[in-house]
Image (cartoon, rainbow, N blue to C red; front, side, top):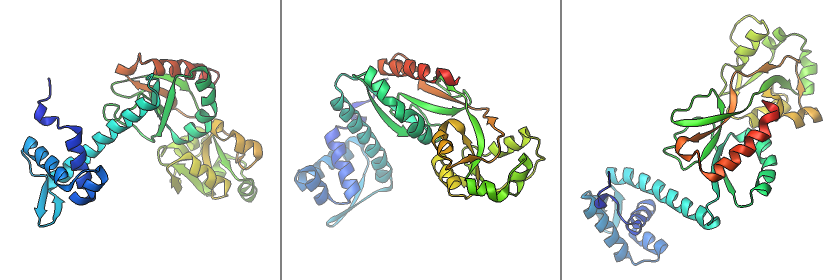
Length: 298
């Protein structure tokens, strides 16, 4: 269904409204937009007449958003930002070879980023824009072509391909290992344990796998592997960390295996994309390269 024109204001009108809403001043908005104050005021009046809604309360020489104006300003600001970003991306790469990819922070910085030069060298017409995400999001609400996902193969309305599995191991500083003298899995009951908020059951699974009776295992909680790894290096506690993401720390002995009892995570890494982007050429090229790159780890 085609949207009525009255609900599609011009970008000039919306820009004037957004600027006035953000600055709280017709004068400041006019200065930012290189317009006269009366021109900005006219643009906003046009918008209010078009929508048949009062967006500002005007009091002498000041303005303030109405409740509905404030809610509308937030959505307009987001929409203008998306248009601006899309225009910038097209300008930066007029051939259209742009891939907007959501990544997991530690996977992106430690595993993907060092390998990206090989992909870019083999695909010189493609530019990749990276943004970090820690959890599910709605492809319909965000201008993303694909995402690196860790979890179960469940993402409504999306397609995916398996990238790799993951082994985690209890890791800590050499000093903490000497202090506690870990020998068996049960020794960790008396140790400070570090957890990741996105994997609340990880330690319970590890203890269950290694036949340690159930109980309450408490400790510090972090939201990213990068910070929990640094805490483990500093001697704060023992963390369950993916071995492929801490290879350098293990090699340099900044971290050691507190005990050599690994666990394979039940979740996997996937490349996920909205079904309507399945044939997008930059995504096809990246998907083919990424699947080949992770083949040895599957």
